[in-house]
Image 1 (cartoon, each protein chain N blue to C red):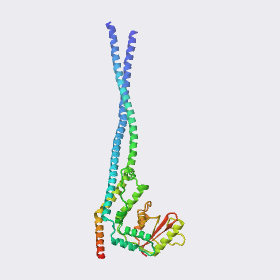
Image 2 (cartoon, each protein chain N blue to C red):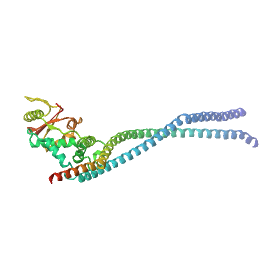
Image 3 (cartoon, chains in turn orange, purple):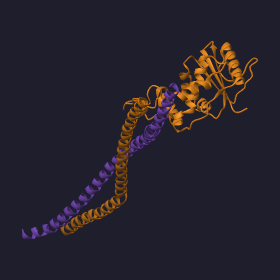
Image 4 (cartoon, rainbow over the protein chains, first blue to last red):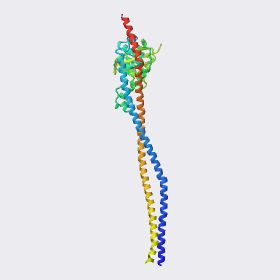
Length: 283
Length: 111
């Protein structure tokens, strides 16, 4: 009996370790499989993400540096533009156009039909057409005293308000600088009558636009209307810069291939004054 | 007494084997637990990295847009400057020459 008990106890003691051995091998296999598949996959993903993270960080730093460099470049270009502008204007002096050109432009603007303010508009228009690059140098402000916190370069957007004005000025400067001189425009009676009638009718009714009302008959290939008061230079600058007109239609007409013009300024009930410019090609 | 002691020896041997087996099993089990914890940590890290990467991708996209916009602005300003420089270098002397010649003609006429 004692021997039997001893054998049983021994059997138990031998079986228990064998059970542990089996569990040991199972767990070891499980561990190896886990390490190979799941842990390995996670490690690979982690490494890939970390590498991507580093690349992204580097790209962000690179882009930020580039943007800072560009901002500095814009400010430098702006201030250099200001220096060039003042130097050019200084060298050209008080009479940059020269006597002959001024006389020619004045003579071309003289008309028995137009009054002095209308002649003044044509005088400035002819100067702008004859020497567009010189006109741009003298009257179009292509520098703005930009600082690093200016919205133009802080956001990189040239939209709305002052930023938009800068953009239009700059585009006008670039357009006119690249343009060759155009022929002078001469006053024409039919064009003047067309402009005068439209200015008078629009002024009385408070109309803004180009459609004719009443007895007015149009006679033009291109027409610009300016609402509000201002000197001849103010009117021509407003039409050339064409702020807020994405098509730049007025600039295109003013610097277009025309021969004759009629200009009329009349009172306008809403805007104070209206100036109509009717352009015509060859008869 | 000696005979009894001889009975105990196999028990002792078996116990020692048992203890060693259990120890090795527990060791492997602990390693498995450790690996599981490691995976859990890695997964957490992966989630964090994914979020971070997403945020960085978004900022990169915004920055790229900003970069493109500011590049266009820079291009315009540099173009303006180049035009000014061009005017200053080539055309100014021409205009000044014309102006001076006109002045000279005016004087002759005046006489």
